[in-house]
Image (cartoon, rainbow, N blue to C red; front, side, top):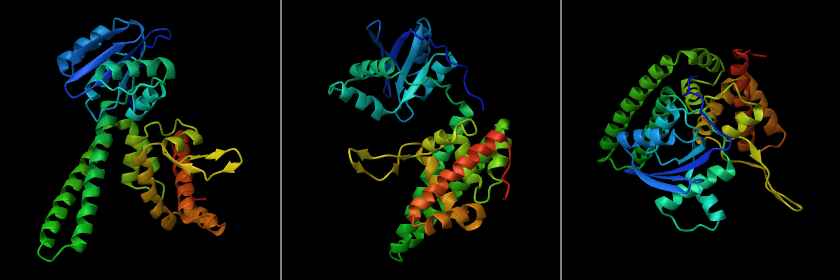
Length: 319
């Protein structure tokens, strides 16, 4: 799966934090104690990229801001610079841990640079434009599907006078979902190296286009991970909750929510039509496991199997 070029990382290089807003970029070079502001526009990003390329850099930390950071990240990655996108909650908790309660763009840029220097997050290749496009289409499909479900629920409760309005909107949403599906099909087909992976995934009973597209777009690392890693990235790894003599219930958390949601829907189908998953689910329930716990275990088993299938290049084989 294509990604941008491998980042040029210097172990003892500088750490840069960039706070992104809709119109501006606040930049902090930690080791040089430099701070300046640039426009979050094509010309400003181009000039900033050229300036940062003169430094020996270990990491450029950028906070995810709902899309305003995309052009910047793409330009930095294309230049071979070691850019890392972190979640806002990570940066904010890091700031609180240091007792920094004030929040300005300049302070945020410095906090991001310090986060990079101290926490040293891994620098990974940025996903290709095709993968980002597919993820955007998947997100749009989720939005439309949620809106459709809301309208269906409203229609059930609506007065007779209002039902035609709900039905018209549902019909429109069906049309938009169909259009997104066609775009997804074309986008996935354009990534030729995904064809074999796609065919492997849909060979599993209960795994359809929705699951296959979601895994291709949201989990491009599939096939290169260990069982523990794929479970954690899918949000299906159970974590302990113990303290002293207390032994709490292990619960799943974190990971990539869209994958977990799609696998849940797939498993609802798989435990009806996939003999292996049905047998595993029934065995867990017969052992006294709560149905939701059994379902989660089946989801974890399924994604582990899919990871091994892609890794080994082998289609589903019924035992």
